[in-house]
Length: 209
Ligand SMILES: [Zn+2]
View 1 (cartoon, helix red, strand yellow):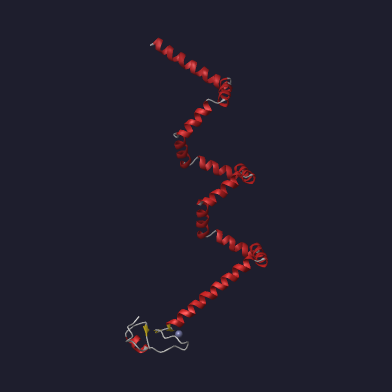
View 2: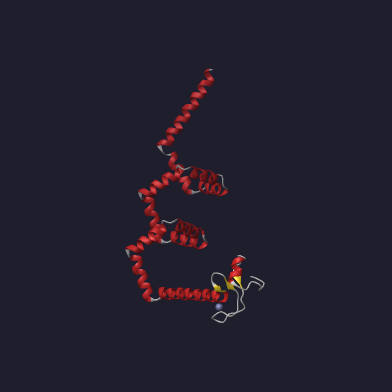
């Protein structure tokens, strides 16, 4: 901006100003300041606005095409093409895609969809197949041996929830049946015999010393 005293481009350049004002109309009839590099500032603003409008129009046209039957068929063909597959694979391997996936999985929508899938027959079958696979078994073994798992287990055992679950289990018929079966087993009998022997040995040592 200037106060109207800088009237020529030469003066503006000499004073290192970006704009000057001649008071004359440009060829499109604007009486406005002039930019030393790009001319009438009103013309610059009009050019920018028409560029924006053209790009909005192009965007709308692309959107309309994508929503049309023709556009859908073309998109499907692209996705199935080698080029489309390569583009998708490259995107999925990118940090941007990974961040987007993580953000989606952490969102309420992502969680709800995941939960719905896990509860579906398809999801259950997929999980069962994974658990039974070599990869699934190896992953479980790694997890079970991890510090993370140990810490989780310790925290769980100390929780009220775990205590309540244990009390429920201890009082259950299942537990009683397990206990009865255990007592009747050779292993339990052997353990009992060992305890008896140890007691007898301890008693004997008391008596003989
Ligand atoms: Zn102009």
